[in-house]
Length: 357
Image (tube, rainbow, N blue to C red; front, side, top):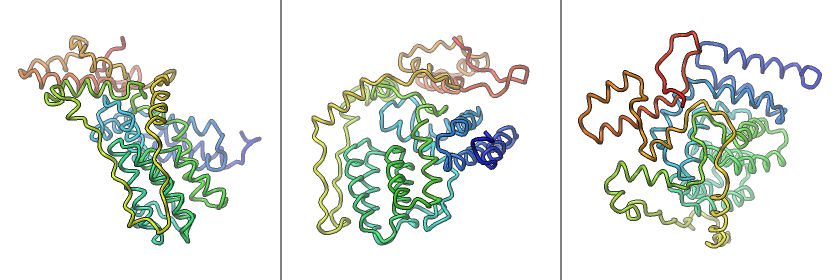
């Protein structure tokens, strides 16, 4: 490496490896050092793989699964919920500070928003949230042209593009975030904040299907969600179409958009259907070794839960429960918990964990 890269690259990667060997909770700081290197040398695979190694710590995997599970069940396989998992993961792990130029990522998003296009940016964010929170794809479709128009009208294009690029990543739209930040770097090639953020989000765009604590992407488009909801919610089982009705898109507020600005026509439904068909035909994520045994999700969906395979302490817990519904919930929780990677190497004190099949 010394013959190809400056000396500081080897030094920072060595610092990152040392952090990963330490006993303290320093995986994100190690990843941040790698992103600093990737900002200067984006194709350095060693740095990219070291980030993935940092994110593969068993304790970090458990903590992030628990944190994300408070917002999205792992069995919820609707595509927009997968994006929410990625967005939450980015927020939990990012150490980008954004303090070199006019943008300060330590501020609230509203405080960092350039004032001269505040209404446009706020409306674009509102549209994007309809997709992020509700799965209404027309919202993200409307947000993009609003943001592009804001770039043209602001007196602070660098800060505006940084704000929008960070917003897209914060909502899990990594490809769009990279596109915005590459626009920024084309106009402001010396932007330190933009290049550092671009390097991190580019990594997320390229590695989003290998994040250890996120279930593999599926092509079922909500089949597992509907099956599980029918098990846990009698109302859903009785009338799934009534309970799971899609949300209507709320059009942009014209009062927050400048005079003379016209939004493009929505994408035709026929084209959307064709795109959805192509996406549904894509193979599910395969080929990566995962630290988590995600096969437990198939067991949940099918109801094929063999409690005799649980460790002894878990079987005793189940014996204490008389209510069938509570017993089902506990079995589901145990399957999830026991699918985690072991916390100790062979030879160390071990916890009970779900046996490999």
